[in-house]
Image (cartoon, rainbow, N blue to C red; front, side):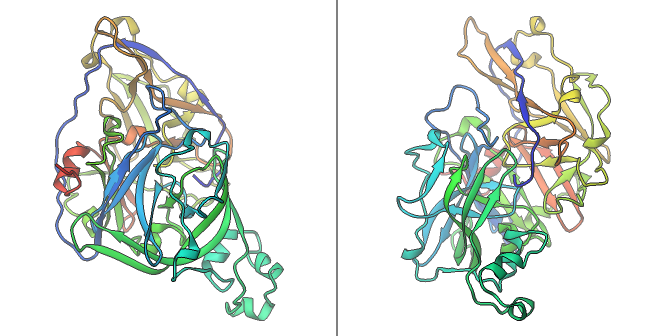
Length: 457
């Protein structure tokens, strides 16, 4: 995510339980629609991962995505969901992380020159393909005349970088300066940083159905030569002009995704559906929607209001107002972020979430349900597997499981809480941007992938 995130402290709560998981089965309609695209997200896992999902330094989880509306599959990587981009002429295929918590789309650039500091876990990773602008006949550097150049620098006076680059005031005012947009540095909330140049090239996004694709001749993205704790490129799905969703032209409507469960990691035959455009919003009359909150500080991102959390039949202590409204500076709200792995809650509230009685648990069926209650009387019961996760091999028909929530410091700038991708497994999340609302519905995402043609048999 591109905003300042609070410092994160991880608390693990262990339970002895049997390890069987059940998911309800539903299907997702897939009508053809020229104003939509269905893509697929890939779920992948690093070989160095421990037996439980590890929150990386940047709190990211990798998975691959295909876009729906035109339909495209998503596959999951243990750190997030990856989408395949075809960039350049001829096309170069790069997998990047689908992130609703940022705007910029960027790819690692240079065959051997891309340098990532503190990224040892990703060394020799097969998904670490890089983009080479010199091999593309349609690639060129964005100029200072581009509004994207102003967006990427985003200072109090956005004309400053191009003034330093040599643009005259008259060409800046008329947006006619042809000088190259200066290099940028883009910072993520957990401390990650990427540095590169703003580049334009042809982007082709292929849907799940043959012949369904979308092409953007002058797609604008970051060509990143160096990074800190950000080893894999990112497709920003925020609401800003730089985001991939915006440049695809679907922000007037919306999109949805259905993330596969972790058990499908490294399975090349199935992808999570990412649906963009009209199809994402059809047949949703029975879905529960909560209002989308608009942050005056971070208008590009997706916020909702949290009213309560119940564990079994026990409600947590009073939810702080910061989780359902913003202060005068625009801080607060619960951010929906596919680029953050686990859900984060303010420390004082997190510590009051009811804990199950370890001694009473003998099977997965006895694990307490966890329900998130959002504004507008919307409740989401997390599917089993979205809150407790095994961290040891079974022993005597029992296994240690961990509660996959994290705490964050109260009072820091940015969101008061984050609803992460781990808690979004087997949940269809619909972003209705036209009506400014977000819907949640438990769903068997593997079944949804099959119905969208995203499961190879």
